[in-house]
Length: 256
Image 1: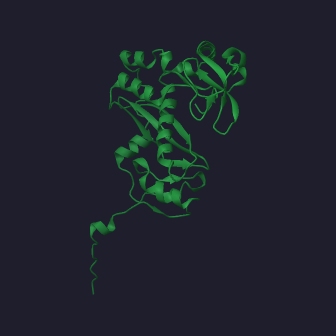
Image 2: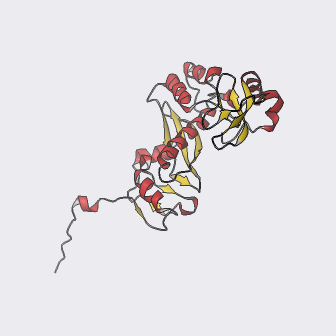
Image 3: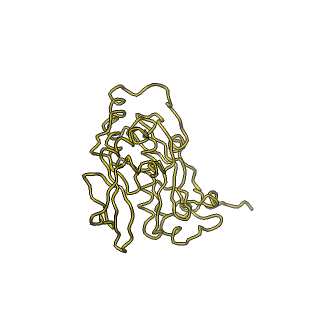
């Protein structure tokens, strides 16, 4: 007797993301983040990079974006775009962290890319899943401009509240990867130039004693035209020092 193979309804055969190996260390990370991770990629730890998989392979278009280097170094970008990308940054936009690190807010990088190429003519494409350690989330992104590969970098972001902070940390990872990719395009290159850093901090920054809500006292950096951010308050009569006298002992480059 010849058997007849019955075709199951398509709704029952739809494949979904499912675990096939060990579980993530924290169940709430799996339940809260895996199902909602942006771009549909699963969150993975370094030791478990093969424990989660998509049953349905990505489309050809997705594959080309996540692995392509098409157009890399074939020709220079238009002169108008290059002038915008490499233009000196306005010093009023430069911020300083309490530890002395100079930085440009991530929204400034997006505005520069939009002016240079136009909204929709550049994109950050994830190159793989998120990787999570005890306190850090990271992911690799590639920057494409005018349909061409421009740069690739791994962004990272610390997080302290795994139950409620993973979505915010994921956005921070993307922004961190973007500014790292922008280094190859010359955007805000002054912020990696030690000569510029020394000069800017000597002219525009100062160290003051800050006191936290718990009473802890610490020497912190701020701009001359700024005040300390919460939870820090400047100590009354605190002795401020100039950048030139304390610059050498501060870490002005990290994670960038």
